[in-house]
Image 1: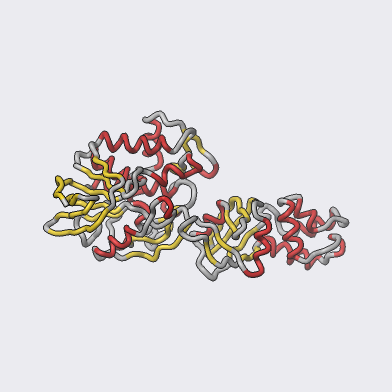
Image 2: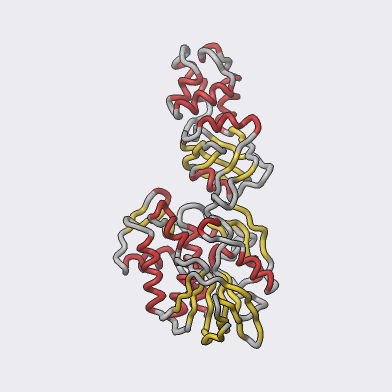
Length: 393
């Protein structure tokens, strides 16, 4: 291998966090090499938001992130805010719109965000090495030596921005964790997040509702989200389920409130108003017909409402307000939008993202044990953590 020129910083991973970090460090006067084993920068950005990139969320706050240290993200998120990224988007003339719950999307294409970040890198003179596999990584005499393709490159700083193992078809791997462990950093057990849940056993019958969705409140571990839930041929999906999957642990139930707007006693009132009606018909007024039919069957309340005792109707209300599903797993990293867990925040500076005991080693983005809610929060963490490291390099 030939010995290549040295750099101030080598950034491994040309995703959202790596691109931001490279642009900031480059424009700050650093000589930066941005490396990725795939041949295209920002691959996850390109597929996000249905190709329109949900690039941030205006409601970003530290309490919308999961981490073993819930305070870790405060510093970076507080110094690089959604408005800062939005200012950049607008400076490039990229049209955008706000969807529900503070989610911001491009009007056009996610390609515009990648092009913007690459242009920002170009302004900083960042050198790109795409489609170049990373081999051995060594550290000594204050320098990191990294085998990139058929060269060995050197720098005083090395940034781990290779993400987590979610969506392996995009080239995602656990490389970040292996590298972190090599340098003595702890790794919080990674698991799939923002991922569909699978059902088995006697709950398989709900798979017959594949394609049916309804607005619900989904709860797990005392946390709840009100959004759409979708039945699939494997189990449960949709925004409410993806959100709750980050809090769900194997063996725990997920509770679904199918009628979150109904006050206690609504079935009894329906009985008084329409004694000749049925539970199925009443449910069908608020829920998709196939779902109403299945729930009514499982409740076992056949016949007219007038034939049901108030006590049975109250029991049915309680069941519908907290219907317990027992997922047997998730659809795994292949379908997970992000990864929970990762490089332990206990080993990193929340100000700079630098390893506390390994000078010049940084970790940013999804590689770190900070995971946001669905809806642009993970991109904002990528921008904020990348900016913090880029400033510190």
